[in-house]
Image (cartoon, rainbow, N blue to C red; front, side):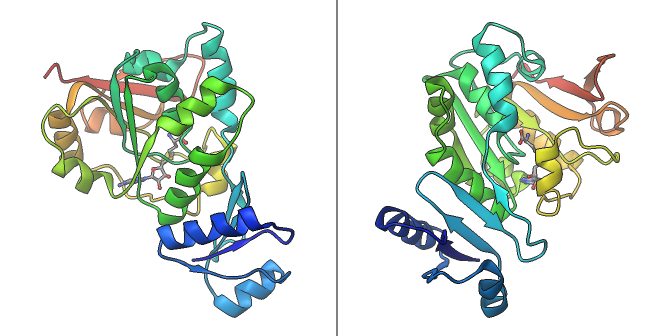
Length: 259
Ligand SMILES: C[S@@+](CC[C@H](N)C(=O)[O-])C[C@H]1O[C@@H](n2cnc3c(N)ncnc32)[C@H](O)[C@@H]1O
């Protein structure tokens, strides 16, 4: 991957782009008004465009522009702030001061909601295996400015990790987190979120292994939560209690660890 700036840029954005290139061990390329197509033909690699408050990745494989934008979580967060319930938070029994390990960060919608609930004294750690998504979301969570201060604070508190969740879980001590959460890509044909459809080509689709759930049982003090399609066999095959919802194709399941 190469890092560059937008066509119209300024010193702050250039300095920011250079820092990001350094951090992710990528080359910084001066944009010099070159088109994205020119950069693709010259470098034959994915491109990240860095602005002051915005980052975009353009994978070489799809050439589709992917932005970090907490679309989905904004609606859910605003509802939560009004005192309404959130199905994910209910399924995880997540509350202030608790810790959660999100093993499938994606665009971090669920992580942001979790962080909003666990607040300042809680802890949200989010793992993503895909390097482009990891970079996009890690940097997006730092710089994205919404007009709601609680949501900005929630984004800034999330710690992101670039790893395969199985490898990461294996290294964690017993009872490290209250909750361990999995939201794998659906095996069924529909995906509920258009944001996820957009990143579909980038996401890792290897299935969750039974050994990973065994590691999660050791790591989760209270509960492991799985989000999946209502028809998914994963609930049964991996030993999750499925919470049935008549009105949604997305279901949650849980394993209480009570460690
Ligand atoms: C359905 S998305 C998660 C969406 C996320 N809950 C959200 O709110 O935006 C699943 C994500 O998990 C990632 N993933 C899949 N297998 C993984 C693994 N073994 N380790 C870490 N990340 C993984 C995929 O690359 C993808 O980004």
